[in-house]
Length: 235
Length: 251
Image (cartoon, rainbow over all chains, first blue to last red; front, side, top):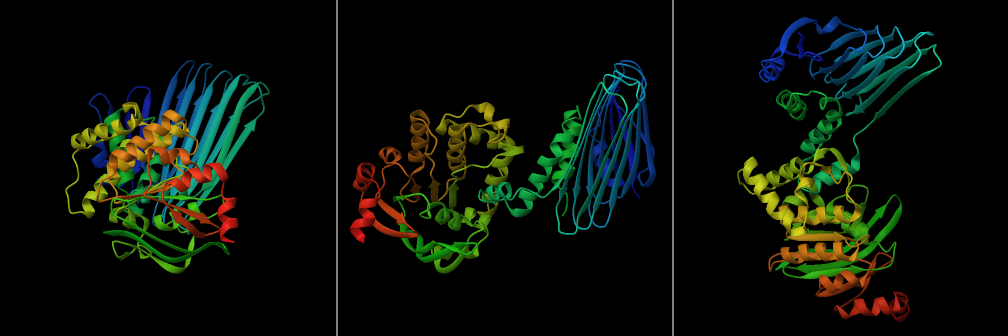
């Protein structure tokens, strides 16, 4: 059973999917000023956000190991000056699939969106990211960026990445990038040569990979709690 | 007391034989220098001792305090007392120096049956050892070697050595790319860590470092074999005449 908890701090959302026990541990670190809600079942979650003129929001998604997830994210930028920053960490272990489909709709010009989704697949896990950025003809002065980086941590792990840009306006700044790779052998050997066990070197390297996403969790207590769950992934 | 014993070591990478029968004995309290032209196998020797799996040992043995070093994983070799100062220290973005060293130090302590250091104890130790290489405290929170200059990376190697206190330190071209000041700091750090119980192998091209870290013996490595071993005066001869005279003299 995969739970989903949404933690909302005003302009910042943290959406976590994972098993009850894990989420329970992380939620102990939620500051009093934030609100926590159950927003559905991770096997078919729809997260929608609309931003009006000059409204900004930052959303960090973390799908923890051990639980499958299929998440549909839809962001509509409805006014000039709207800005949305999306970050996601997808962790697939066992035979789980963690799938995110993100639709970033620049309904008007002059808005900015930025997406960074990172996948980590262990065992026979599968991460899949599909990201569609839509910029209609009249949405000039749009800035839309997307990056999806994936780490394969075993021979049968798989990552699927499908960036899609549908851009009909001509005065825009848009980019997308996707990578799939393995852990850096030199980094692992360097750590082991200092006496860090192979297992721990692995963990540190995974945490390092995840750091780029987790840094956007502004509350340090909560960020450390989430980082800890990644560091102590029982592999 | 003998620390390292290398006997007839042959090693290759892909199908090329790089080490062609190395014999080396390093005892407690000693400083050995290994010099030699590019391609002679200096880095291969240090990589094989540290346990890099891209090199295959085809013959011979390496023991540390009589234990078979080649049968150990890289981390086991570290726990048993081997430290390799890398020629090109690796950058690890996302892992900061504090977490990196704390993991390393606590694993060493676990191996020795000691309890892990508390966060406070550890930071105190770090501060103390960073002074050995005049390292700025702000480096602690940065990613390992990320954005460090060449000299700072080499000083970080010696700082790590100070934290781990190995029995056998192998410094692979630690002086390459260093200006005079950085060289002085690195050498001073290394000398401060020397005891009657530990030993150091300094791999270098240049005589300069050996003015600061004075070796008991210098070995010349040429085409995978040690062709000459002599006292520190050898370094000056090489500085003046290069390596050709040795090769020619020995035929």
